[in-house]
Image (cartoon, rainbow, N blue to C red):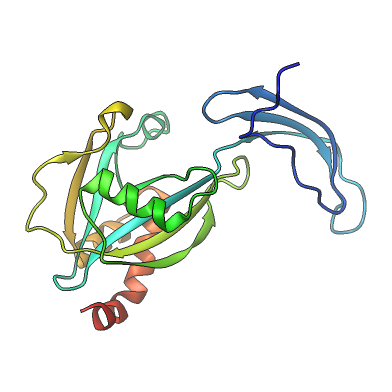
Length: 211
């Protein structure tokens, strides 16, 4: 019998949950489980038996680099096959982001991803929050941060890890220009949208505290 993959552990116990079967149907980089279960409804009755696919991606981190001295921020652009399949622009405007190693501190991972994907180094980090992206089918939990950086006058080269096939373009924007993209729904991924909404609310405080 094959050992159960470490990235697809059994579900934790939960009051009223009855797991009737739990099968790992794909053991790739991100395993996929097929789970048959019932649960206790809000009225106390037993639910019908449900079969759900659970995609196991683990934990990730996203970072919004912000330069309070110039009131500019950095986003990245890269080709995304799932965006193309969804009928959206294939080159997405995003925040630097990546997955955590098992047991890794999210801020440490965020500093690594920031450097790999933008070439920038952060003077300080501030936590934005922790959120699920696809709670209806995936266990991924994202940790969001903003980072104080000193941005160059312009982006001059691409970034990313060659061994992972990354081709990442840095995009430096005035904060107001980035907020205009957000309002026009030209930021079409959750991570960048959450970070920009947060910065819009906290920007004046950061400019007072970080300069």
